[in-house]
Length: 226
Image (cartoon, rainbow, N blue to C red; front, side, top):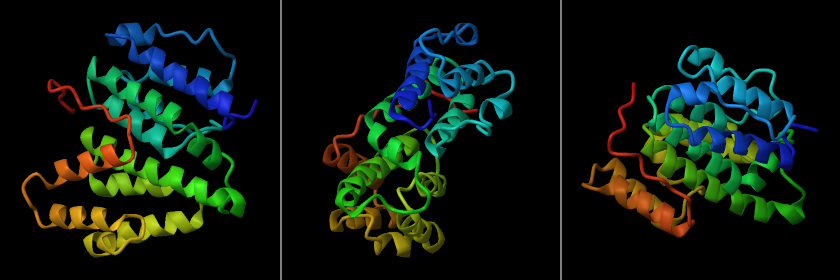
């Protein structure tokens, strides 16, 4: 079974879903993965038990077949919050992997090239929604814009998409305001954000969530990041 196959990705998502049901780190330490022998799913279960004691090891995904930036960044964020907010973040990972399964299945086997032309348009639509989710959800959990764009670049569909995100990273606000990654309405909202308009990012997030029907989850008000 290859770790980037759809079944393997869903097994990884299920590990995070089970972990999200824990209420304490002790319960997370006792997590078992009896439903699968998929190596990546088992390995992620082992890493979750290290989030408190050894976060560096918990977020080191070397050796795993399926290791998107989305998962690595989510584990880093989870290690920076204490339970039960840590479990909330793991739930976000489970939701993201499930809702964007098609995108993750595509990038798991990419080699820098785009999908066949017949599939490319649909794949780009999927990617646009995934990028919107990263911007809305990761900023809600405390990631800075440059961290989110870097994560998007690493999980981009192909080299062309990665280059578009890289331009935003390197060029800053001016590049984002001219980027084809965003619609005209979104570029106007970005301008408000960069101009420091009151409530600008709240409006941008609401637009992304509503327009792309995102499974967005608001961070609990009690959350304190380490």
